[in-house]
Image 1 (cartoon, rainbow, N blue to C red):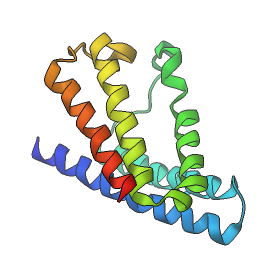
Image 2 (image 1 turned 180 degrees about the vertical axis):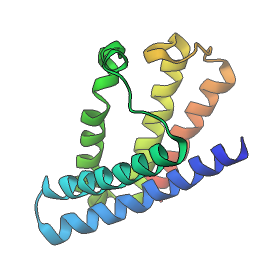
Image 3 (image 1 turned 135 degrees about the vertical axis):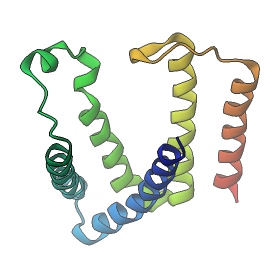
Image 4 (image 1 turned 135 degrees about the horizontal axis):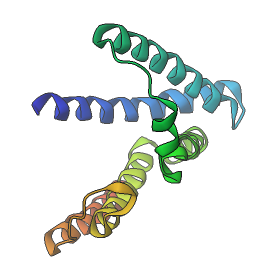
Length: 150
């Protein structure tokens, strides 16, 4: 389990570094969309290599047609939502700074996740929004306000 948390920690660090990388690409290309395409091209390349390494090392076949067709509608729109996030990152993070950008997006993600857990949305197990979980969400808002103000 420690490796899963370490992986999440690294992903969070890389997400913040990606913000600076994408903002820099936007400054140099002076275009609101092309840096997002560069990001997704790099992501496609990385995922392709990861798929190849995983498939070869584990001898795991690709999903079947039935598996593809069994996915609910919301499983198909993740890339669209990721594109909106990357476009926000490219076009906004350089204007508001890494702290505010990541603070807003992480706080929004925490609050959204509380609602998704409360009602068991999109396949997540239901997890009641207890007073302490709601306090955690409120503290995220308070922390964001401090980061944004100072």
